[in-house]
Length: 135
Image 1 (tube, rainbow, N blue to C red):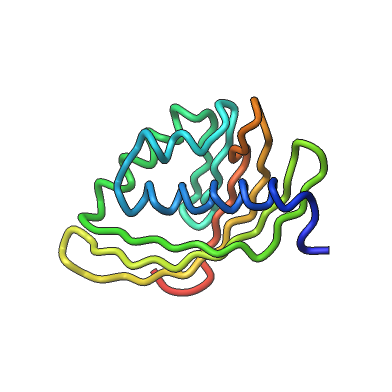
Image 2: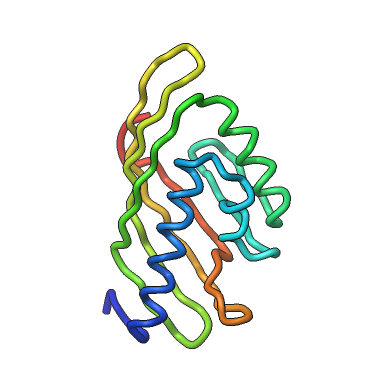
């Protein structure tokens, strides 16, 4: 089943996804980093990149964001399955970005996530992103 767990937990995970997207749009590294668990992993197989640890993930994100003077990201969950303090989540992204030379790109992607609830707060433990179209 694609939607399991309490409505409150599913809403909190949706807010986590929305907070992540908002932080991208606002270019707010602190807010973006706050969505990750300390022992998180971020996989970007299309770039042959895997980063472990929140601090390293945030640093990699800052370097990546420096390549784009403008980025807008929207994400929509396709499923949220919760078992206790762990959830499996899939969400789809739609982005618009400008490269340094002014080229506009519009990638569409998919995140396959594992989220954990720690201290009453949902966080990304593992995010795997794949480009579905564009870039």
